[in-house]
Amino acid sequence: MRPRASLAAALALCGALAAGCGRAAGSSAGALDVPPPTATAASSPAASPDVSPDASAQAERARPLGRPGAWRITTYYTAVESLHKGRPKAVKGCPRLHCSHGRTPLGSYPEDFLAVIREEGSGRITSGPQRGRYLNWSHSVGYWLDDTTRDSAGRPLRPWSSAAADRSVLARGQRFAIVDCGRDGAGHRIEAAVCAAFRKARWTVTDLFRPGYGGEHHADVYIGEETGPGFTESPFYTTLSGATLGPS
Image (cartoon, rainbow, N blue to C red):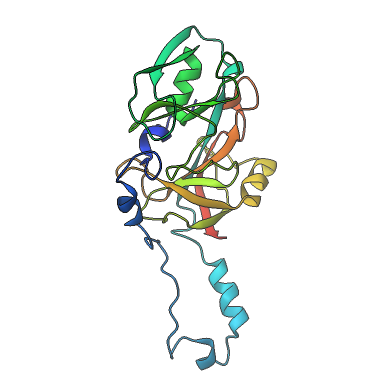
């Protein structure tokens, strides 16, 4: 597995998951690396006969977010219990949402499945009385049982849509596209089919890294459930280094 900071530990779980932190998340609103355009008499299309309104809008949509070629894009996913065969380990936590650091027994699960949950944030249970539910984990909540994966506002994560980013660069709610994939951690160009999938997706920042964890010009994008054994060797579980982002 490629080294990276635990997403579950890095995200600030707010809204439905941790009372009282919504205001802190809201304080990042508008913290974009590229400020929105402002209409002035000197710069408006009406005052510049050589630039049509359509051309101005097209140029704005093409403007990169942050520094071109400076982004590091990592991926996160949801573990699936049946793909893990480690020794069973009992865990305690919350049997429901709106609870933190509970001590209720939640069942026993493969140790390697639990390790992925603590790294990625969630896992789908495929056996026992909780089959079909999710065992989620975060630094600020601990383990809890749920009916879905969650972003920090309590909304279900959406594969190939939900993303996390550093609040100093992209604000919560900011939509973006990956314009150029850059290279992988070994310096090789990203495979064409893999890059095409990342470029086709339209991402929305639904989570913010805890200060000091994410890093400037770093986004983490959610690619759904693992699809088979050795999922971390999949070309989609990768790092895009030197990528370029644009508005969506």
